[in-house]
Image 1 (cartoon, rainbow, N blue to C red):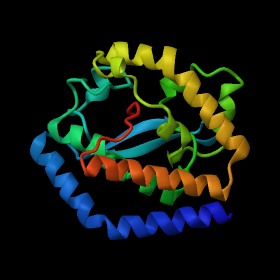
Image 2 (tube, helix red, strand yellow):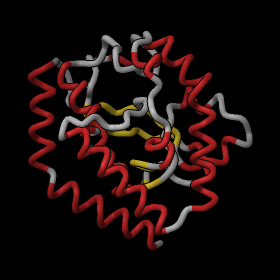
Image 3 (spheres, rainbow, N blue to C red):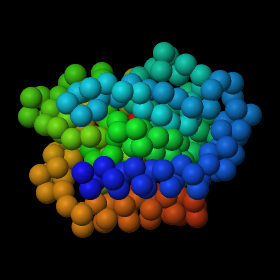
Image 4 (spheres, rainbow, N blue to C red):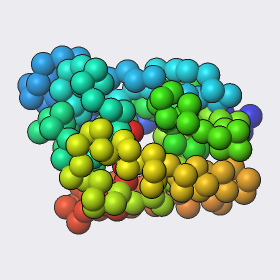
Length: 210
């Protein structure tokens, strides 16, 4: 109950205070490429329930119909503005709406596409016992392998499944077993640090895109 109250309070505050920033980002996306500035992608939530996760669109229109669900940095579908908002994590900010309406929580496991969740073992599906998070331990801890950054979208997806996914799920499972207020506060602090590093041009510890 307390977690839900915090989710509602924080997400409401962020959506109100950063609304001008959202407008600027949306206009920049629209000027850079055709299409809706927002992208609504299917993700698996608590207990495997599907929901539409909001993001600022960082790729060309209908990119999900012309490639895999996993993208490396060099994916040609990413727009000029898209590279910036991915690096600074601004593309993730519309997910505060998902937090507000209850699809997601502030801190939790990484929300994955249904095509990826189908590959989970019964043991790995335990990460679906809680709501996915806007940020979380696997998003922070699993750094992007440099070889993945130059792969095509199809090769990036294979690499992600073969070399990254199991590690991510293990980290998220450990978080669920030991989650606490102190661990959540630490993860929030690390997330803010990553965003500040990116905005200041110091380079965040990048992680695979959603």
